[in-house]
Image: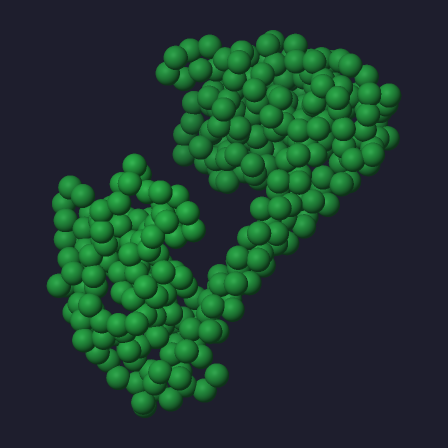
Length: 365
């Protein structure tokens, strides 16, 4: 796209359009329907009648200051927002959305207790204005990138939901995993029969450099999010090695499960779990631990009011159906392929996000 920047001009926002105040519409006042109701954080509900009569630009005024949204249909912006209708703006609303989203309106917050955006100050924002035809071309380009990002996010969400459904099937009362699993090829046992926890192993004699706390384990992600250096000091003493499964026993409802990708030490609030090789594949273990049935059992056996903790002796009593090792291998292959595909999709998201920012920098820089 060839831009004619010599034709661009800069105009205060207030000369292009006027930010109108949204109207009060509480939860009780909303009738439901097909009209999106916008607050400062996005769509907050639905109503039967719109406040606007055309596509609308919405800007967060109070609370989530500076968030910018575009509705391609008439909508109802509430009183925590400003809005601009397409019919009263001579410039392209998509272009304004693009620029204002990149402008960081939060820096204009003038309030102390409740964040707020002053309309008079917002009207002074200098807006670069290409010719209208270029505005539309640039907006269409970024809209295509946004559409691609939404499609990729939809694919990721669908695959994660599929994987979660498959994983939950492993520990259901009637075990299922496509056509690989059923009552006939499963043996009822307990978790303590297929895995062991916080054992000492010869490899624990090796020196380690890193430690892990609960803050570096997140839900729905087996990858550790960081680590600390032992040389900087730590009170942790529990050992783990690469490949061990780390499970947060404190506040088990947070679903903290990770696979160690290095040798180290960890918090006492982390259970170090390893499969018993003749009965369970180590690679399959984290999926079993992340299943809803396991998490629910961990929560129900936790004790303590402020920081409830579960114990291995209670987790070990959970009854689980286990297939033979050959079937486990086939199940693991499917789950790992799903993981690989999800990671590829995440990389696509990162690539699209970086492309969008690079183009923004080139066009607006």
